[in-house]
Image 1 (cartoon, rainbow, N blue to C red):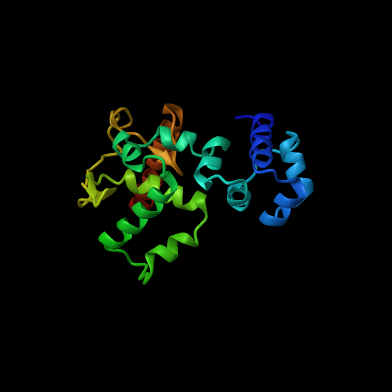
Image 2 (cartoon, rainbow, N blue to C red):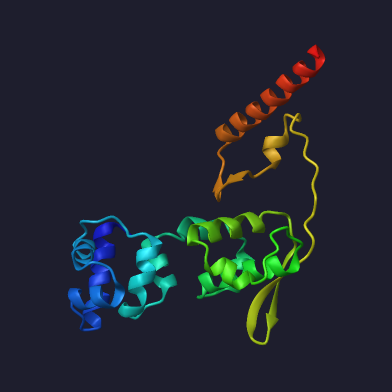
Length: 208
């Protein structure tokens, strides 16, 4: 959704609530000038922090605004279908439950007493990045029904040995950085850097 369409969408939500821009500003803590610019397509899509402030006064969920703004589109496309099915309509709540469950069921060195509060304090970008990275660790992710609520059960991660000296390695690997899949060209560059590091280290040892 482009900025004009998103602005029109926000305006329709506000008018459906019979609310003025000034009232929305008062209820959300977002300046009325900024809201006006958003509705008129003169501002870029707002950051998630702004969406979180205005969702409740507008009578919609945070997730709906995140979906409408396009923040979750690319991320969802890279998730396994069983996870998307389990998440259903409450995707962001599912992400929180997923991370809390993972932390409780796997050894970690963070010594966190309250995982729920820990993740509540993180930014959405950080949580989504963690969620994506965990789902690519090689766990068996089993979706089960727990009293009518779908959740994910983790099995220990499968360890896979990968020899970066093998020329065919790139053909068999999907590599990601912060949730973005590397292109073939980027993977070649990455492999070249890794090989350069080890070649330099080997040469240094030989000269000692």
